[in-house]
Length: 311
Image (cartoon, rainbow, N blue to C red; front, side):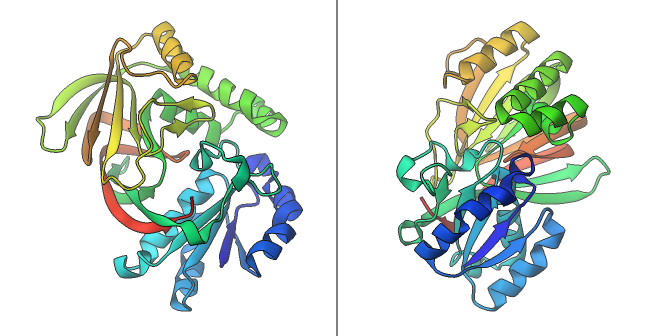
């Protein structure tokens, strides 16, 4: 088993927390190799070597970004036939740990750290694929496990990942206030923007986007969650669109999402799809599992049941 450890996760506290639980996990699962990483370029070669030597069990230790990093390294490296043999587990030491939600007490390491390490019960899962043209016009691809977004939540994640001095201090202090601060800064700066959407084979429509969620796991951005079900292996994702909201109504919508309420709100639409194309006149932020890229156009799709994930 290869453990991919991000010591910078959780505001830099992940390494100390990992050292507090590693021995218990080793007693439970046997010896494992550890690879510390912070970036995809440092990880792809190590993952490729592990796959060549027959390794098929991988664990992301960190936050949602670490899971994102592991999945991208595997999907970039492994042929589909090999990827189908891979099983992913995770230990949640990050700021949000949406990959583990809803949390299960019986699955927690030492009763407090969320974990997904039941390899014997792993099942095949879909993985999201994002094909996009970046701000420089270069075609790129990324993979995601939980959800993706465009609009105010993507802008909030971008601020959270590139903190100003106040946010740096808050991230060291506590996760909740830091997420709230980034969200409020994104809300204050938000302006709806015109985007053209094409869902599956439907005609293209141009809408004023305040927020667009592309969702496998309805949990995102700390305590927020949509009211759609989790879809592990359906071959589709949910699309949640919030159109043209002024800041007060957008704040009300975010407060509703903190209670898991979205459907039926004025300006909201939700539907299932297996492909969604998005285009805008100017580059826009796209968030995937807490990681953010800038794009001119994008297409979301699904790789059905392409690897196994621990429950």
